[in-house]
Length: 190
Ligand code: FES
Ligand code: FES
Image (tube, rainbow, N blue to C red):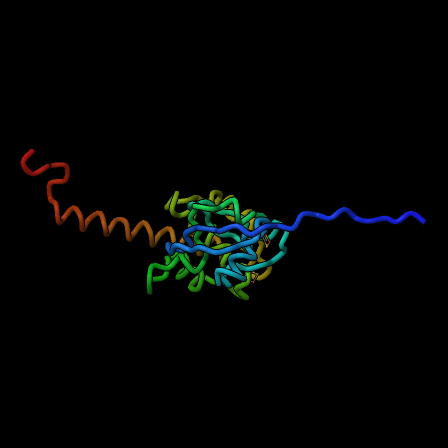
């Protein structure tokens, strides 16, 4: 009788993973083949990053890598060494919620809430690039995220409302800086 043996697969080694998560320097030992979603949830404590399908189809696990949305269930953590990761826990500014967090609660963008972290993260990336998106641009930005509860219109409404808050905040900041410098462009001693 011929003995059949499966070839031994090499075991993954550990690597030192050095990243910034939500503005904080983090250094962890991770397996070289670890998936970002697992590292975030099991080692970095980001339980806000949700595991939905685990195969790239629902968007629940979305995070930002250097400001760009990324599916953490399809990302090798080790390849992000030296990069900056933002999870849903990093959207608020201290005790101040991000406008998108406020409007999701006010406009019904979040119901059971399981998909919400992914939508918040992806929407925040859209609004930081474009604070006046059209409905089509909003739908394109969230097309990789699934929600079973809301029917999506409340999510689009929430993002639209957040864009209005951001525009209003920007115009208040502009008028405040104009008052503190009534002659913008005029350099003292120039
Ligand atoms: S858990 Fe990553 S896309 Fe669904
Ligand atoms: S709010 Fe329940 S899946 Fe989106």
